[in-house]
Image 1 (cartoon, rainbow, N blue to C red):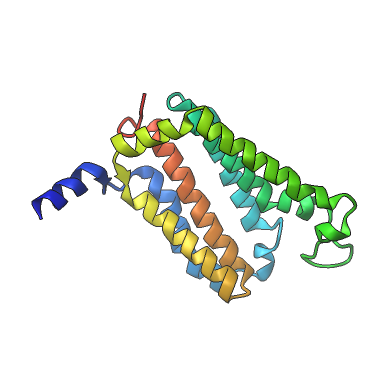
Image 2 (image 1 turned 45 degrees about the horizontal axis):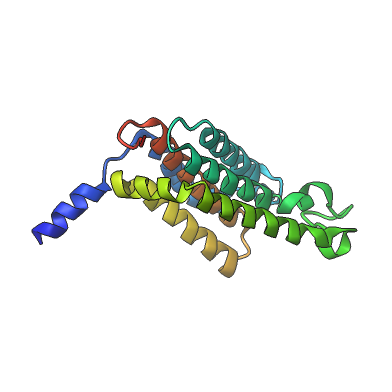
Length: 205
């Protein structure tokens, strides 16, 4: 039992850092938003998705500005860029709305040369994976996992956002619920990136 306690103390950080306030506020806003916000707020390119994009953009910029473990955070920036592209369906929900329809967009099958999107995304993911391995970003990630305590609260919010998002997408048709859950996930991600980049307790050389 003592070994378990020592392991937990040495590997997990239960402090509630200021960076976790933002995802906490989003979590507290989930029920009021689902209950009171008009459905339009959850549409593509609506308020909640725009807030997601802003959050992801901050994640991307912070990752690129890393002063330590740079190769890992550059890889993280690549992943975040993919998330940003995914949020707008690789441009489909920006440029290919169906005229006269609400929150309706042409599919890639309906768009000339739309077939090329999936191969491009596949090549990007392959290049990203190769960078992760050959730049030794994977080594830097392992060093962070091995040497830095796990910020428990920040990851709890991340996990809750992921679970709520999956639940909303698969079992409900409530766009606001889905989008506010994704916003919770992204703000938790931002809080984690902020910790690892700017808090002295989480920095790695």
